[in-house]
Structures are given as structure tokens and as C-alpha cells.
Length: 344
Image (cartoon, rainbow, N blue to C red; front, side):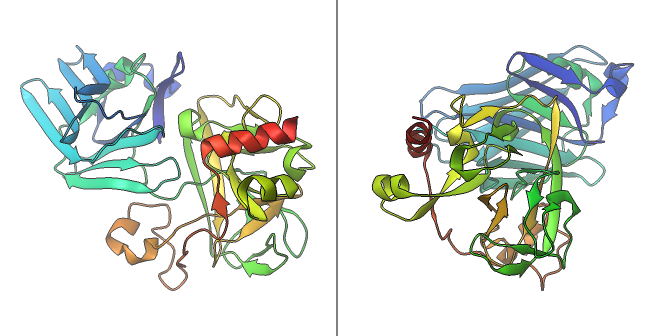
């Protein structure tokens, strides 16, 4: 099924199929996801706390412990499961995605921390806890920016384009959701390159997944685009050269949200994002602008980790290796500066 509960920004949603008799249902596998900015303080920082009574007493807590890392504790009656993920935390301004996935039949758990773009900062396997219950789903309300799935959700590179995004191809514009391995797209540099894979993922429409509407006529767009906050645009011009000393830069959509050039878009509790994998880290063309394709870095070297990503089924011979990004990626404050200069 996938995501069955989403909580954050004062809103709470539970899949209707879980409303009736939910408290008595078990979750033999699933994923708890939390988004948070981790501080560098010396005191423990509680990131998530869930308490329930039905069908039996239980709790789940996630805590940042200075000098140790992230501590997860799940209690089910008299049983207590504990797992610590070592994480060196300095003062951070970025939002991190923390997830714990479990598969009780397979006797496996997985504790991970990622950046918004899917870069994995820490991951650790563990034993699986006792299955969570529907009572935990209902208790999620008001627990912060978090979500719960009844599937083991993937880690790694994150799709960032709406399915109906029109991408330039030698045959004309095509929806990104319709592209398949073997199709070709036109890059921002004007070359025709093959699509190695098309990936998609349904996620909670909150935090680092919350839709952003990039609006005409800013940044060369001839049509509004709906993208995830991490989707980058290729932006060039005299102001870019003056401000950053280079011909073009990559600008994350989240840094452009200012009420004019870009705004957050309401889409309901869930959203499905798509992306395509190309041989190099090329930019494609959509609505007259350059848009970043999926960046995978040196993921192909980590075969043990690749199984937990959306790219697990890509044949080894097709999996590319992307070096560092060819263009400078603007930091949030730099993106705000550029957006304000374009909106003035």
C-alpha cells in the first residue's frame, strides 16, 4: 500500500482504509520517517514520541543524544527494542530525513539519515522490532513532521518532477512519466542522449517533498513547473556572472520560494515524483528552462546499498557513474539572493 499516515504543519491524514478497526491491525513491515533539523546542543533532543494504549500499551521514541547519535526505542508490552545510529552532529541548518524501516518476517531493521537530496549520511542494519500496530498509526497525530508507511521505503536518490512535466526529446516534448529506457532526450547543451531508467516514488507531500510551483516568466520559464524542493534549475545571465563568478548555476527550487518566482503548492497528503537517469549528470529542457536530471554520484560502487534504492533493478551494465556536478549548486542564501534580484 505505502504511506498510511502523514502528520505535520498542523495537519494530519490517515488512509481511509485504516480508519475502521485500525487499532487492532499489525504492521509486520513498514517505515517511520521524521524530518528535523538537528542541533549541536549537549542535551538530548526528542524528535518523535508516540504513546498508545490499544491493543496493548506501547511507545516509540526517537532522540538525538549528544556524543552518541540517534537513539530509537520501541516498546511493546514488556518487550523493549533499542537501536543507536552513530552520527556526528555539528550545528546544522539543513533539514535531515531520518527513517527506521523494519521487516519482521525477514528479521531485518534499517536505521538511516539522509539529506533532502537522498545523500545518505549514515545507515545501519539491525534486528527487527516487534511489529508496530494500527494504534501507532492513529497516535501519530500531532507528533511533528513525520509519516508512516506499511512498506520498507527506499533510500538514496530522490525523484523530483511531476509526472506531466514535458521534457524535450528529438521527437518533441514528452511527459517525463512516459519516458522509458532506450528513449532519448535533448540536453540543455543541445545533445540527444539515451534514457537509462525512469523512476518514480509516492511520498508525503510535506517538508522536503512538498510541491513547489515555479512560475512564469521567471528564470526563462514559458510554463509553470511543479517540482519537489530539491529539483534544480539551470540559471544563467549577467546577474549570475556578477554574483557568483560563473556563466551558469544550479538553483534548488526550495531556494526560489518567495511568493513570486515560486510558491509552495497544496496537493493533498501524498505526491508522486518522477525522474530520469542519463549517462552523465546532464540537464534536460522543460518549459524553456534547463532542469537537472537524476544525480547518482558513485552509487554503482555500493552494490550492497543499491538494493535499498529506487535503482535496484537497473542492470549493472547501464548504471552510470556521475562525478561532481559540473555547475555550482547555490546554497539557500545564495538562491534567495538570486531570486530577489530576478524579482526586483
